[in-house]
Length: 319
Image (tube, rainbow, N blue to C red):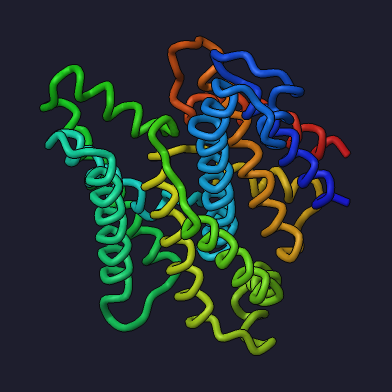
C-alpha cells in the first residue's frame, strides 16, 4: 500500500518537473513529445533540459535517502545523515578547488569524487587504526574530519573572488543545473537497493542492538564494514552529481518510520522512491519560483522538509 502510493508520487513528481519551467508546456504537448509528434521547441526543452535534470534529481535523492537509512542503522543515531562522516566535506574541498582553478564540469566532478574518496579512506583508516573499530570511534573520527574540512572550505571561500564565491556557494547548497547522470548512476542506485534488501533482515535485527544481532548469528564486523562502504559510495556519487544537497538523507527515512515503515524491506525501497520524488519536486520549485533565476535546491529541501517533518512528528506523537 505504502510503496504503491510512493510509486504514484514518483510519477506525479516526474510529470510536474517536466511541465515546470520558464517555457510553458502543456500535458498534451508533453504527451506529443513522447509519442514523436511534439514541436521542435518542446522536444528540445524536454529531451535536453528537463528530462535529464529530472533523472538527476531522482537518482540523487534516492542515493541520499538510501545512504541515510544505512548511516542511521550503522551509527545507531537518529541524527545521522550521509554527510556526518565528512564525505561531503572532502568532496566540497575537491570541488571548490576545481572551481578556484577554473576547471570545467568534468574536472569538477572528478575532483569532488577524489575528495570524497580520500575522506572515506581517511576516516575509515583512522577509525580502524588498531585493527578494530567501534561506532563511537567511527562517529568521532568522522565529526572531527568533517570539522577540519569545514575549516579548509572557509579558507577557500574567504580567499576567492566574488564571482567564484557565488559558484562555490551554489555547489555547497546543492545545484542540479549542470548535473549529468548516466546508466552507471542508475545501476549503482539499483545495486545499492538490492544489496540493502538482501541484508534487510540483518538490519532489522541490528536496530534492536548488537548483542541481539550477535546472538542471532549476525556477523557484526562484516555487516558494519559493508554498510560503511556502501553508504560512502552512495553519498560520494550523489555529491559529485548535485553538490551538498542537505536534509534529504536525514529526514526522509524518519518520515517513513513515523508513518509505520520500520521494516527495512519496506523502508529501503520507500526511501529511494520518496527521496527521489522529494528532490524532483524541490528542484522543480528551485528553478521556477523566481524564474529565470534559480535557487539552490538545498534551500528548497529545507523549506519544504522542516515543516513537513514537524507536522508528521506532531501528528504521530498525538496518537
